[in-house]
Length: 299
Ligand SMILES: Nc1ncnc2c1ncn2[C@@H]1O[C@H](COP(=O)(O)OP(=O)(O)OP(=O)(O)O)[C@@H](O)[C@H]1O
Ligand SMILES: [Mg+2]
Image 1 (cartoon, helix red, strand yellow):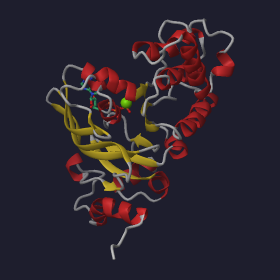
Image 2 (cartoon, protein in one colour):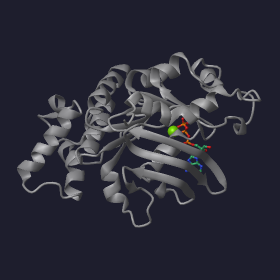
Image 3 (cartoon, protein in one colour):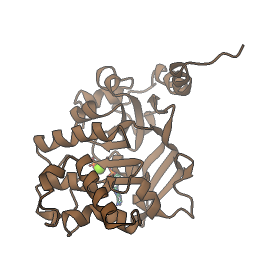
């Protein structure tokens, strides 16, 4: 009789290698040591149903290496938070996932990054359709100098996602509704997007991102310019959006990571130190460096 593993057994098998590494005590104190002492990623970097898979990713700016041998999966409909001290490479790594680093001349990416079966860095891969599948929301809300309507309609127009004007109207309304902004702007769709408050502008940018029905949304500190009320709205939205999309979010707020994510990835000096279920990372981290960061010993 064939023995069939349960999903939990499968996940344990998948992540067994990194658990084994975690149990081996580091020979030197990694907190005071160089990044050579970080060792292999501990915890659960892999997912049973990955939407994106990253393997052995290195990133260089000219001669300077910013990301070292990072392997990570982001599961379908999962929210993965990326945390770590300033300059540890969170934004650099996030930008690799939809080739946003292509805009930086000196930036070189090595290793494998896949969106399901698609090789993101295949030389023949056009970045425009890729970025429709993997959208990005930035730290500072960046609406185009256009009306609210035209901001959201921008992507569907360039990707030709509708036939009739009424179809476009519907996409705009649905995207604004999903971004929890419709009620606040439905009577002024033709006013400039830049005239909205910061929190509204960020929700407009989220509406613009989801209007092309991406599969993955990358968010780089999406709430850092917002007040606590606007932040709470975006966090609620992330929970709602994860039902339909896969999300990777960089945040400096550990409370935010704890509130919105399923797994949390801790980066340190360009290395991925630990990935674990979010609750575990914040209550019982496996790696000394993660523990030092979450307890405020550095940051
Ligand atoms: N455009 C660039 N050119 C050269 N080096 C860069 C560039 N962008 C980032 N770096 C370097 O790469 C490393 C990682 O930077 P990155 O911006 O990814 O860190 P981060 O974790 O997002 O930091 P923060 O939390 O401050 O946003 C840093 O040493 C940084 O100086
Ligand atoms: Mg950053």
